[in-house]
Image (cartoon, rainbow, N blue to C red):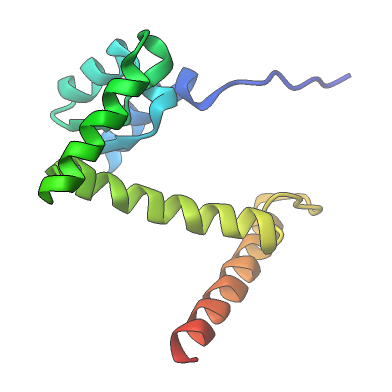
Length: 138
């Protein structure tokens, strides 16, 4: 009998970052608050990357309020950190991934084999791209 263990992405972040660094050259590691762990940040620095990881406000009491107040002050003076601008690129990719999963068959793949799965997902990407192009034109 086969069983599948549930693993959170943050548990494999360090090995995946190491594999990715061996294959591509990058300057930043963009991650959400689930990756707000000292070991992941240090590993990113050890790879020569700049970790841009959203702060997990639940880690420290009162931090959520402090972050909200700081964000308000930054908006009032029109200031945006370079990290915020770069992090915004990550959220764009997340919207595409979410749209692919929610609306274009990426959540429930009912085929077997890597070639068939890739074909299934690429049809979803094609559909998503066509809709975005139609929105751009209209």
